[in-house]
Length: 605
Image (tube, rainbow, N blue to C red; front, side):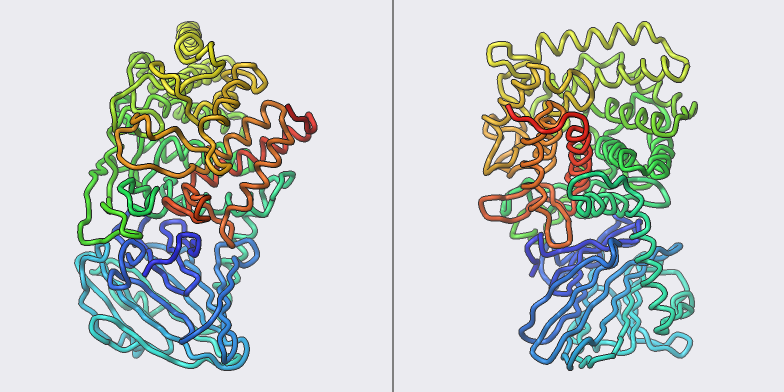
């Protein structure tokens, strides 16, 4: 049975990631990529849908941590007979994927339970499993269709009704290493058997993995509050970035519900241009420009072609067809159905996306002092297409499935797209119709100030046909549409505080208006609460920003990870996990708060 979301941690090789429970069970793993089919899918069903567990037999407790700020996870189990540690990692490989699990006896003797249940295609396919020898070593293989998994270790579990199980004792000083390796089903097993599993080599593998992650996270700008969480957030964003393609996924999971038992269950294992652009902006602020260059190259490949065919999201490799399909064989996390793969929002019209891309690429130019002319040719094409269609209604950044609207946030990001295009031409002498784009920029701004602002209440509104507010309006000062202390921004902050705060956290919008065309409710969206921190900071309200940021920094789980949403009433995490949008917003809020405190000092309203 799946655990509470907060009881999971992420390990990964920067091509995919696994969720490891505090009970030692890997309940979610897609191989070989984030958007591949899962071979362990117990997270969205039961143990019968695939999992890999190593834990003590009987009563025990567990604590866990990432080693030295890396992506290597260590879980310490304490049982009646003693203490053992379980170290989990996914070393970076070439053309294959490995999960390495080391069980080490620390004190006394502990009886351990080992269970390996492989189900390909999201728990739907029982593989052909057999025990065989490769170069004299006994291994267990599971094969079905295109996929092959190989389990190796000093003591292999035995077959038991389509499961593989074993109980064994671990005493102080013992070290047992198990690995599961994915290969294409047509590959030779000799490649797996050639990998050295001797203790010395494995100890070096763990050290290198720790050194890689810790060294990277130590490079970030350090003058921020809650530095450990900022570093963990940046490292999580790195883990969600495919190091080969440069694609940045929104989360490694699908269909973790926004409201347990409800139907707001979406597949986030894809690369939203918006989320990726905001991730890049956060990485650049943290000092990581190489990662920004990697994503820029992915962007050029993914959106190449006719700008009019721009999608708001793509597969990790840039593929465009993300057809949404339901999986009725999976009962869903906490009974939340349907379970979906693919995402129908890929074909939506979302005008804000070009703005986010332009803002992110400007931050790269500013950080590096260089303008890539190939990248500029793409940006110019995108802005020219936006020029033809900016007056259209759209689905907005929240991907509503109701009627299109003229969302204020979308139009502000249209303004940002033209503003950054004009800045690029003026600052870097890039070619483009600068005067025409200035005129469009000014026309968009005038329309937003006229139609997107409720003068009677003194706040910007969600869309032109409502008086409702939306948390996305907090972004306006972050893209320099208005100064953070402008009375219209301060009025918008007050309206958000009055209408959208539940249990001290910020909702995206009020679902009871029916604007999104979906049944049911949702919980506060964590990125929106971090946006409020940034809005406070940019308004010069450092004390308000600091207090809210401190509270939000109590919400990550014990290893520093955040979900999409948080149910404060029940004290639980909800939504896909870990969520890039939440982590990038945390990073952004930390730097906004640091800048505000250094420049202005604290003040209150």
